[in-house]
Image (cartoon, rainbow, N blue to C red; front, side):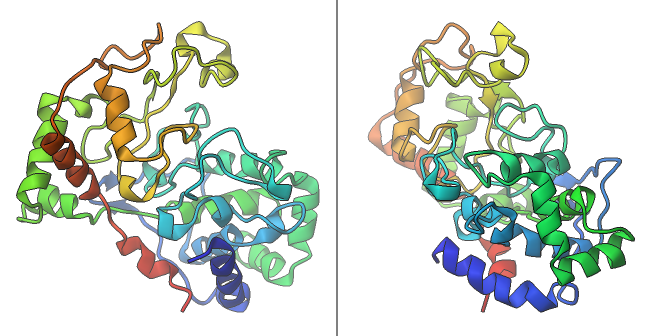
Length: 329
């Protein structure tokens, strides 16, 4: 489904109903208990307010970009582009990451530097190449919308402001849980849900290739920032280095979860790898040899059948059951 169509239809449905068609607050899943930040506020109605805001293009300067423009539900909340596009077709610096299971993130953003989803909400709204919206103007615009102002008074006992905006969207994002893939059925329920090829791929992934050193089950990420050697020279975008100017952070980006990886191409922080075969080829060569590259990355050899098994296993991490909450019909 086209993102623009989805946003329009969803906006029509939520314009008058979002306070009465509530999404449940999530406190835990198979992946573990969700830890809420001390200053977070949530309820079913706040989640539904956040949902409406997430799909609202009025958060952008020219009313053209919503959070959902770069985080499309059917693509595991990515956008299928090398790098995302903001207002006036401006290109962002990086590939759009999935926000499924973001409730479990230790830090937010590729630089792994923001501690909460609430803080992250502000970034794309004000970023020049994304929504390009002055926060004061954004709040003024949203406060003038009766459904949002009335919701702020009812749910937060205050006028619509940045506190309401950030807490609502973050509350919604914490409900985006994906934990029902066929691998999950195998891993948690001990069911015979994986075929022989997928089982061989899991064994290859977890044992022979030791991919679990950076992508351990069940989250398939360590949540840490690592240099995976996609470049010998990182040029302009040196990753986490730009946060503290610490040379030990050059080329380090937060390790993404591999959950729903079948849906989230292209890959890497810059979207430079178009498919899983290109990702496997990169790692089989031992990376590009950057001096700060993670020592776990070393060359290996696998045959065509093993490569197919590995890809089949990665596809078993796909879970689209979350989409039942995002069907506009």
